[in-house]
Length: 118
Length: 109
Image (cartoon, rainbow over all chains, first blue to last red; front, side, top):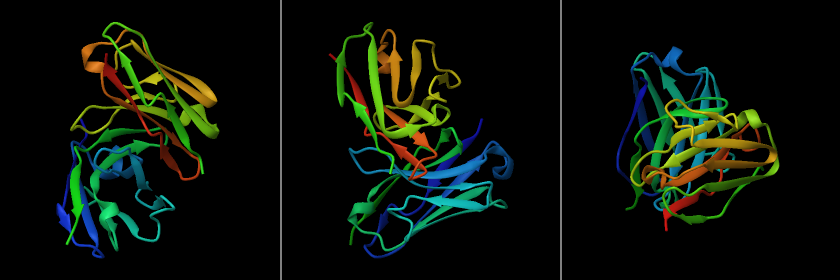
């Protein structure tokens, strides 16, 4: 069973870069999923797709975040990373990583809460 | 941009009743790429339906999905206590590549 665990700072200052890591266990990241994605959810609100990485090569980003976001994979560590630059309070949310195929997000991490505040 | 509008926002029902949730897309969505997720308080979403009508692993057959084009439906035939949650629809392949609906909360009446 594929398991995903997000980790990273729970508090980030405005204008700084948010960096999160998703550690995958139960299978090799290079063979267990075609797509790896990040989704976020502000407290009490709905889900927002941040971006996806397909086959470890091609990235797709939400146009509303594209200028600030980067997703990458480290196969040696079995990890997927998210970087979001120039954060503001509007970026405060629970951040989830997910393993997916084009048709759905099959496995989700438990999520990690990130608060942007000085 | 493809916008998914879910209705109703809140559905108040009793255990044993039938729940019908709607997801309407602003543009046609391939049924192959329409999914539904369940989210309980404090938990991550979990996949319920993919490909508009296929149940994910471990999902009981009281859950069913249907629809095509711009109109999709998630039906829970007889609500069990563990089914009370928020449900999101999601599409893949449009612009943005992935979008979620705003969610429908199924609450106990």
